[in-house]
Length: 69
Image (tube, rainbow, N blue to C red; front, side, top):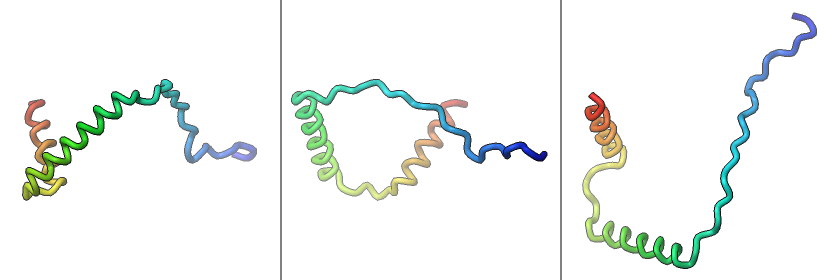
């Protein structure tokens, strides 16, 4: 109709308000670094497992589907 504007292609998204986060304490940073070092050491120890990431994801999804049944 004449004089009417077409609907917006992308309506505005709702505004997301996140809570303010305090920076991590030095103790928390040390804890995270130690955990990261442990994970990296374990990865090095275990080495390649012969399964691609997408296959692991598929298996996890298949298992999740069977749990719901």
